[in-house]
Amino acid sequence: MAEFQQIATVDDVPPGGRKAAVVNNVPVLLLRVGDDYYCIEDVCTHDGQPLTDGPLEETEITCPRHGARFDVTTGAALCMPAFEAVPTYEVKVEDGAILVSVD
Image (cartoon, rainbow, N blue to C red; front, side, top):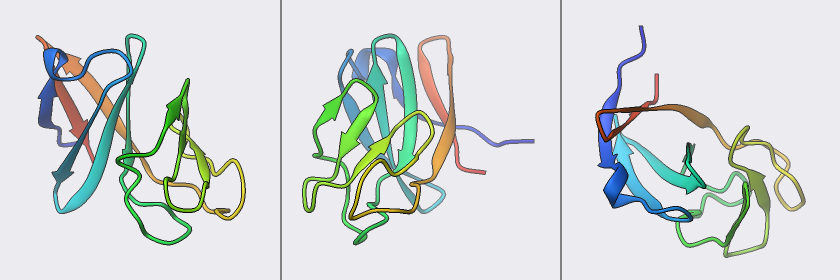
């Protein structure tokens, strides 16, 4: 069974917002697209840099360092220089709390 940890509340992350956190020693980035929440590992698979400050357009985040793009819904790498997907994690909302599992 997946273990979930609260990393934010719905009031902490407005539409288009984001929050970086660490869950079980894994750096994660919580993103809100409309009313949906997504969580990815906060590391570009191209060079290991954080994606925290990368531009987010709809469900695509761009690494601010070299421009690699990832789909935050699946983690898929969408363009070079990245070719490896970024890990994604399960998110659930309970009573206004945003919970993430990195299991």
